[in-house]
Amino acid sequence: MRKKWFFALVFIFVCLLGFGQIDRSEVDEKYKWNLTDIYPTYESWEQAKEAFVAKLDKIHEFKGTLTQSADRLLEALEYYSDIGNEVSRLYIYASLNSASDTRNMKYSGMVKELQQITADYSANASFFRPEILASEWKQIDGFIKSEPKLKPYEKGLKDLFRLNEHTLSEPEEKILALSGMITGNAYSIYNTFKNAEMPNPKITLNNGEVVELSSAGYSKYRATENRADRKLVFETFWKKYQKYQASLGEMLYGHVKGNLYKTKARNYESSLESSLFPKSIPVDVYHSHIENVNKNLPSFHRYLKIKKRMMGLDTLEYLDLYAPTVKGIDMQFTYDESQNIILKSLEPLGDDYTEVVKKAFNERWIDVYPTQGKRSGAFSNGSFYDGHPYILLNFNGLYEDVSTATHELGHTMHSYLSNKNQPYATSRYEIFVAEVASTFNEVLLFNYVLNTLENEDVKLSFLMTRLKAFGLTLFRQTQFAEFELKIHEAAQKGIPLTGEKLSEIYTEIVNKYYGHDEGVCKVNDYINMEWAYIPHFYYNFYVYQYSTSFLAANTLAARVLSKEDGALESYLEFLSSGGSDYPIELLKKAGVDFTNPETFSKTIELMNNIMDEIEKILDEKGI
Image (spheres, one colour):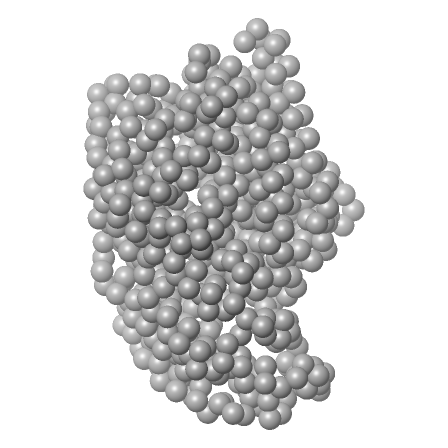
């Protein structure tokens, strides 16, 4: 049955706590995450931390005895695993509180304290790898076969031997572990500066409204329908970043140098290999993906030309990319309405799945609205193994925010099901598959919403929304991945990455992707600072997985929506598998052979089919 109420939403403006930087105390408790599920009070966290620290010296008892027997190896691995679980719980409490208000140095201090504690512990535990590797795999394999409780650790132990050529001596491993005290500073500085100290300019919109251009404010007002307002938003926001180009450049360069240090220390050929090899992802997958996307830039340019046509512009500019394509349509939603839409869209995944999503909504797993000092963007943190994941949103009421919410719920369900079905040792999935579940949910949301619409203009807008997903995920994230690769390659060649140099590299890539020189889309000069806005460049070759996961998610969603035999069961099994196997193998079991080049070509074919449909409607409407 079509939802008549839904169509009405496209013409309604709703007021969501002012969309602004309000004080956290003004937000209803039901829209803030409940961190007492982790620890009831700060004092209980302190007590747990002290008890945790008291256990750390036990690590010395295992030195020289790890491979004496299967029982001793099991005892050591269980201890090591328990320590990991406990520190994750301590860290998530501190980091989520810090994310709630990055200005509060108490919580950032807690995070730094834990970083120091774990760095010291890692240094003391540095004998683990070399001591196990001093034996032979035949001996370790025999232990696993004789002691079934070692089975959850089998993959990790195999990986140790696979990584043997990149494992250092015990003293060297200790030094490398201690380096963690400083190599993570670049991101900490960046995060604090960007979210807590960088001033946010204010502008006056065409209607007289004065708005603050925080990250959340920029995300909202860059999509405004008034082009003059968009221009003001973009110019003001990015000129703010240009003022700090030198400092922001030093921050990112510091991170890149930290990666390069670890790359050289572990004898990898590149920072890319250093990141991918431990996850059993060939570097050729990264390179070939960038190559495939570059070969198919004409399809992306076709999308941009359609957007230009629909907006009735003589020249499409970068500042137009987030604006609505169908004038007069401004879809906005309250958060409560969004919950109902999301739950309906996820019904193809079954009642067990949606019941857990209801818990996330009703039991305060989610921090919803932007507030003063709150970290920008959105994330799901599933590291509370014995409890449940948490989600941070900065919900502004746009369809994009609804999509972000279901995206993060995909991560949450992946973590939740993996934690419930896997032992701690294999509960964490690799980042290569991390974006599959989240993007899968976005596909389901889009299909549900599209099927509820009757107005042709709204349908056209939604088809463009679908195309936007291709543009921003398949192409834009690969653009980021190419930039990340280029800056690491430059650093490896000894090229200093000043803020100016980073902007130069970024400009060359973004101009290519958006067809600036071909007149497809004008990339405004101030966009050269966009690299400084993307926190994922501190995540060590993360962003390309948004794009590869997009390919996998669309394939899997198509199988489930068409009710292909076994598709739902294999997908839910994938969500429950954690890191029990290598990511490419997990995807193969779920129904996606990522090593097959047809996976990419079929997705581009789908994109072009959508554009065929849009152009047909535009021709019929005489646009």
